[in-house]
Image (cartoon, rainbow, N blue to C red):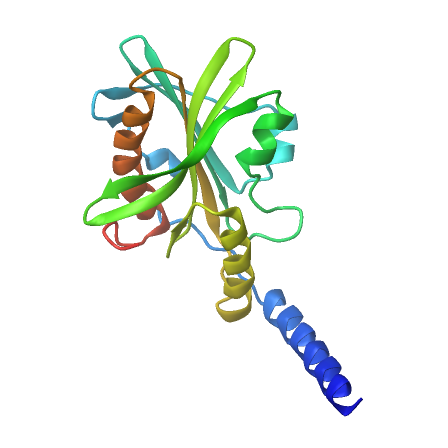
Length: 210
């Protein structure tokens, strides 16, 4: 009984402390706007910037976002970066695992790939999705000032940790989408290798440090 009583007290104290620390979370302001992401990545050049409808923006709940189409010849690549300066209940990043099926896309392949950035090999998510006869290759990851994560579960655990220890919960979901082709995945990896340091610059972190 004494042990149970002590465990309950410790759990209660931990909960109260976590609530107090979470209340001290501060919004993280980007060092550069997402619009500063380059217009070109290799042979890919910006074709169009897209603004979502108010209804979509209301569901996204992002502090700032960038939706852009890049073109290389007849091929198109879509970039979406949704940034959240302070993540909390109801305002966390929407996982493509949930959003894509909700939009009618079905997964036909999934896994992870490594993106070479400087001397690093950064793991990101790879999803093959289809809707009717349309197939697309999707890369996405979660990026903050201090880390890049593929796993949603690890991201949520670290979000709690950051909230308790540092007060900063700012982060972004970065997604690349391209029509499925024999070279789609390689093209996306090449763009991601150039994109990751640019997103780091938006956070104000050294582009060569994870």
